Image 1 (spheres, chains in turn green, blue):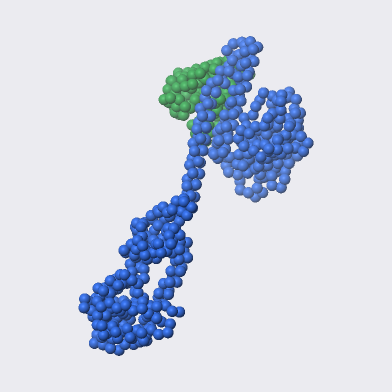
Image 2: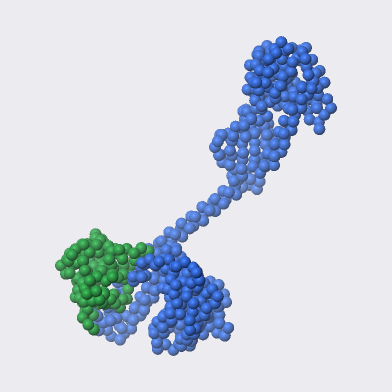
Length: 137
Length: 488
């Protein structure tokens, strides 16, 4: 397998019990370097420092929620190119539209298959390569 | 016709009164009969007018307690539409004309009595009364109750509907005080005793009118019991719908809330299963496998449940596209074939070379076909067959198995929520959610198609569904909106 163009992944979710196994799964794949955060503000701080290629972000979080975190990542030149994958348990009717508007690359509906998570990251890697490092269309 | 004219003569001169009565007798011959009452002053006349009904008033303008036109004005104030014939003297030449200007019907000169004119005046008054009776008949036939109440709150008239509503005989009601409040221009609700004990609701409206020349009120009473019952039933339906909505909302919230802890359990069990947290003994592996399967089952149940509530509440966005049904069906079937490799059930596909284009939501139809195949594979013994064929207006897809078939008593409610058939003994550990067919039916309805079940002639069940063809010259399908489905 060629080396993925996404290497650094940040997981942001206030559900600590989920963050652990997800981080373990990504690390175990041997493809990713993983950082974790347990709320939006913490996620923002980690992102500025860690400069992830992709961020897995939960939507409902105390303080800075997932949508606001997305926007803050987009506004910061250091994290503007970070691919955002949103994880949520709530499939609301306008979720898809909102995700598109906020520049979210993928949606994962909890509970998701581990394979779907890995596939989402692979797809983003492929998109990054296809666009020469730019954002996916 | 023998109708008696009720004549009130207001005249203070007894000689003149006697003369008049003779003259009236002369004027009223044949069919025209009369009853005459005489008042000797204006006040006595007004008192009689207040007590009784008359058809015509013969009025002397020169009375001990009132003289001139003012006499007429006062009589007309008491009985505005009662015909008044004014009696004048020859000397008061223009008094008669002035009286007509003040609303008198006619005038007669005492010194020169004209029997023809008097007869005419009385006949006119009677004709007016006949018209009044016709009107009364009309009113009496009205399905709404109508009650005329005078200023003294005495009931002067009640039609049949009113008597029936109040449950009274005419003699118990007319001529007696009216016991309900009379508020004009405002609907008042009355509670009336019904014939069989139950209370009836009636709506009463009151308007000022003139009754036979007297100021009065008309109360119109309408039985609104049925309307009230209907309103109550409607309110109950709305209430039930609201409760249903709350229940759906609650269930949806619960289902969503369950997804978060479920995702944690799934991730943790997946970590153990894939030995990311270390090696497992054979027994541990087996136990983890059981947990993993049931997590999948719970996930399916929640997903289906949320799908169904979304479909039922019509919150699902349908994105119909013109597409080749063959490609869609083949793709789903191939996916199922791949997933079922190694199982001892033969998948048999029978498709024509080409099918006409259909207009449906591809993802939704794929879900329906997936559900039906899933069911068939669970019930089949050796074989599942999928067929597709075009008819005049639709493309029909059928999924048949060679399982036990559907018991006759389950055919009707098979597509209801949580209806499940007993699976054959020795079936695999996979259990359905009982929602797949309910979802399929909702989807087919939203897509303008139909899904139904039947038993195959020999053995097994056969599920069929139809897809509507792309209209020959129809408008283009609506543009697809970005949806969560397109993204996830």
